[in-house]
Length: 196
Image 1 (cartoon, rainbow, N blue to C red):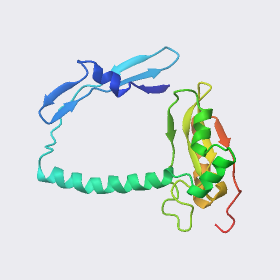
Image 2 (tube, rainbow, N blue to C red):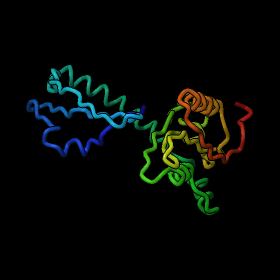
Image 3 (cartoon, helix red, strand yellow):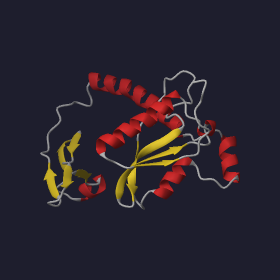
Image 4 (cartoon, one colour):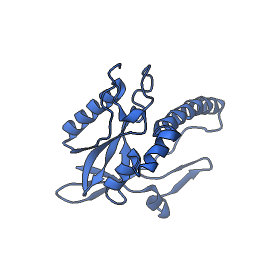
């Protein structure tokens, strides 16, 4: 059984879907469908009115504090998206090699979503290779089948596997086993980081 979320843009286009509740709040009902052997069935959740006052001092203070944390998270995710130094990326380009995220995109079905898993693994690991380690991993469709795809970041420390990356790979295996999802590994690695 697979959950299917209707894209937000399609839901908002319908005048019945968007209900203006007050001058400071609106609600869009969530449409969820499930696919099974019986076919698709759509469920619409009831709308509800928020009692939050976005102009109150408490709300504004909480929003400000949360924004600091969100900005910090975005900064970590930006660092995690970097696939290596400019010199190592240029060297890969000269050798006509694709970067890890490009290899994943080429493998996935056209228009397949890719949900990256554990992009911040190893964030606080002292002496590690940075957030996300030296792999990019996530779930997407390959040949119309949901798969876990894992690609080494050969442009970051030659794809060498540090301690945090090994834990990330282990967890990917657990997820694949628990959910009976095939795994595809796009390997270009310097092996294990032995000092770690």
